[in-house]
Image 1: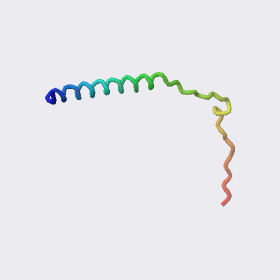
Image 2: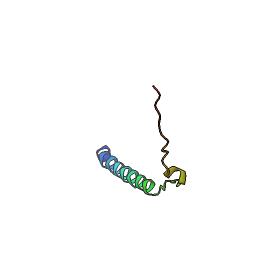
Image 3: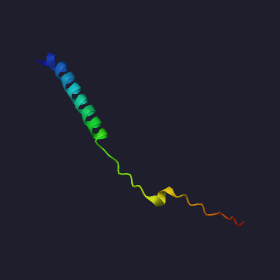
Image 4: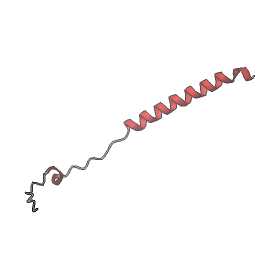
Length: 53
């Protein structure tokens, strides 16, 4: 029956939306960025800057 079509479209939209939200949250919280800890990155290059105009 064509009269029942909006209910099925609403159900499909809700299922798709819930799946999308769950998939995005799982991908967001399962990502661990690799942070390279290097001693040379902590040092600040403090060489004097002599401007010659």
